[in-house]
Amino acid sequence: MKSPLSKIIVMLSVCLFISPVSAENAELEAARKNIAKLITGVNPKNILPSPVNGLYQVLMPPRFFYASADGRYLVDGDLIDMKTRQNVSQGPRNNSVSAAVDGMGEDSMIIFGKKDMKHTVTVFTDIDCGYCRKLHKEISNYNKAGIRIRYLAYPRAGIGSGSFKKAEAVWCSKDQAKAMTDAKNGVDVKSKDCKNPVAKHYTLGQMIGLRGTPALVLEDGTVVPGYIPAARLSEALNQAKK
Image 1 (cartoon, rainbow, N blue to C red):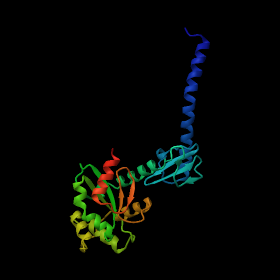
Image 2 (spheres, rainbow, N blue to C red):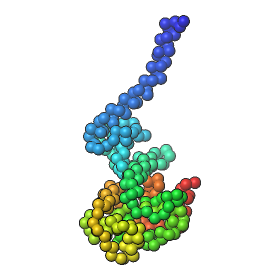
Image 3 (tube, rainbow, N blue to C red):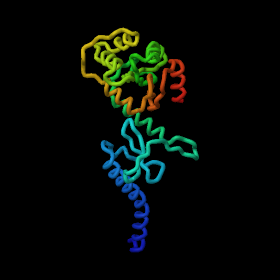
């Protein structure tokens, strides 16, 4: 039989082991409650501790920012670890973009290439953009290099513009892939009006902060602006996977 003293020692040991964890959990839950109360639409599960005490990272795909524990202050920027010289915000921000892009669903995208290809790159495209057309002329080269291209619409002139209406015509076509190729070649695509995702794609691009097209979103959520030849893109993607 254990003596009263030994029981007390065991109980104290358990308390010392549990208390810090419980305190951390309580702080996190309190921060989640405070932040979610002041930021409409945020999922409390997407509020997590950051490397800085009292500052929490908040994911609202595709957005990523930081908030104080009471939710009063927001920080929209990067945290740099001066010891390692690393941008510790980049990974979570990329994850947020990737989640938002995948959340659009492939049924809303126009896709060139088989699903089992080595890489998948999502491209925000404008029908009238010169470099977007140049990229599309290389579609077969991207596919040969094992790169599957998923198109989202981003008519730079905005909702209701001529480019926007061309994108709607392409997405409303029975053969979307053919319509995309025709439109990129300057052919006037005719199709019936339909419920389409062009406005949602454009809004997503705005939220990500796109400034031009084409804009490439890599598998890890990294956003790369501009046209990249198939051979160079393939080399970069293969190096990143090593």
